[in-house]
Image 1 (spheres, rainbow, N blue to C red):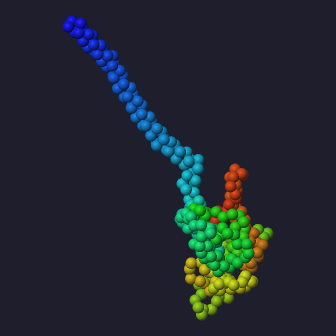
Image 2 (cartoon, one colour):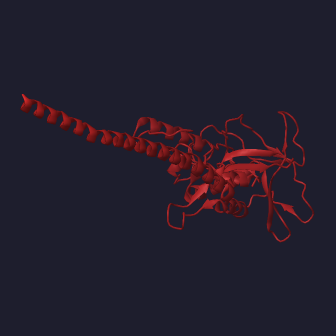
Image 3 (cartoon, rainbow, N blue to C red):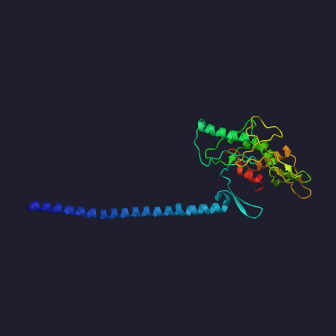
Length: 304
């Protein structure tokens, strides 16, 4: 019995010792877990502060300081003659120009499209656009495909320099027909590009003796290329004007308004505006040269 008691006592003492040894380890484990949790909480708060507050605020402040125009969306704001300001949109977003006196861009869908180039819907859209351009008189061979299609984003603001050059002949003549005139000095240098004021003449009224006639009249569908002095229909989303008459421009002494169409001068001026708003390759290596359609059209209207 004594031997059994002794063994039991030793066993109990061993268990007590084992528990005593384990107790500090339990306390240490709890402390370790607390330190790990505290580190995780501190790291979360720290990176939230850095990445969620400090970095964005710093990036915004730097961009607003160094690149204010780009940081605010490259929005074009023009001060008009009366001193008021007008926003014409962002130069990064394409706008639809359908009037014949503006440089035409790509078809603006306002949203991305994933139509297959071989699909019937895409082909139908191209045919609609082609028919529209034919009605505008754009019947020269070699029409760029970019003028018939939209970009992947549907809002591409650019066309290629070749696409723009293809339009120069039409654009210069159409703007002349709609009343835009070059003004030159005594040496023949172009000093401005103005639009003549239009006479409002009702049917049956006599045309004023000093009126300058436009040449935009109508034909529904063009079955053959235009010839000089042909009368064409212009579809521009508004009632067709069968006759345009303009008032002579009043200019300063020594200046001359070119009321006779000179292709060399008028096309040269349009071409110079296009070249001004042609963007080259990034870092002279990446990408291709592009023409910003919105900037060109605003410049042609004398707003830039």
